[in-house]
Image (cartoon, rainbow, N blue to C red; front, top):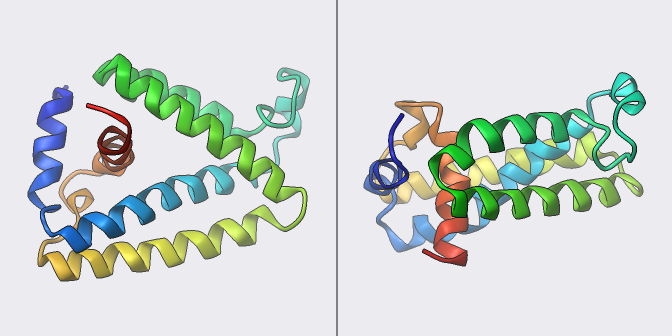
Length: 152
């Protein structure tokens, strides 16, 4: 497995343009947030018998635990904690949004809009998105943004 620095160095190759970086600081967290919402929209009746609260009795919680343990915390405890905090924020906010509107439709709309922004940013950059070469960059992107925003 690559080190955190190796992932970030590879990711940085196609993220040099200030406009693209600014777009990523908005769109990458929005995509992560929307994916959490999409997983929360999956019916999760069976999970309710094992998990006590609706914020965690959903597939997003299960997937996030697996990703946090198998990817983020293996890279770095600090990045793992940053992504854990962001994941908790995503779960709670998606839960409350879902109390008022369809989390499925909201998440789909946000996902599409944020990806349009991402592809525009890469058009400005003149580089293809990193995940084209390795899908793991879909997990590296959010860690890169959190790391840049909240501490090296």
